[in-house]
Amino acid sequence: MNRVLIGIRGEPTPEGMDRILKALRALEGVEEAQATGPAQLQVTYDPQSLTVMDLIRTIREEGFLAGML
Figure 1 (cartoon, rainbow, N blue to C red):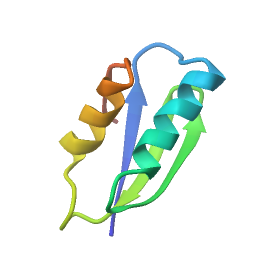
Figure 2: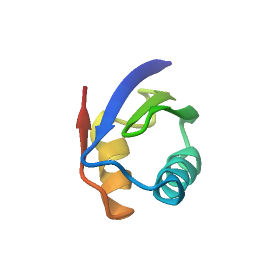
Figure 3: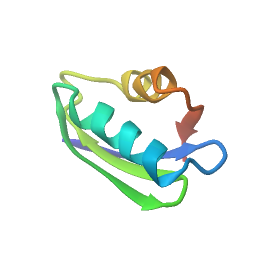
Figure 4: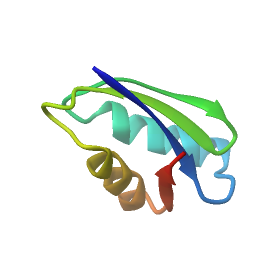
């Protein structure tokens, strides 16, 4: 398993952050996704199934810009 910190541009509302976490947790290969700050996430994922770009793409599909920290 790999772990990555992802920053969300701006500060999503609590509802927006919940939406992002729910979308990430629904991905096959994500073991854990949690908020570590108002605009920061930590995701533990299987690199055999997903890439960091897959995670970022999922966040963008929820309407937020994101990048690795």
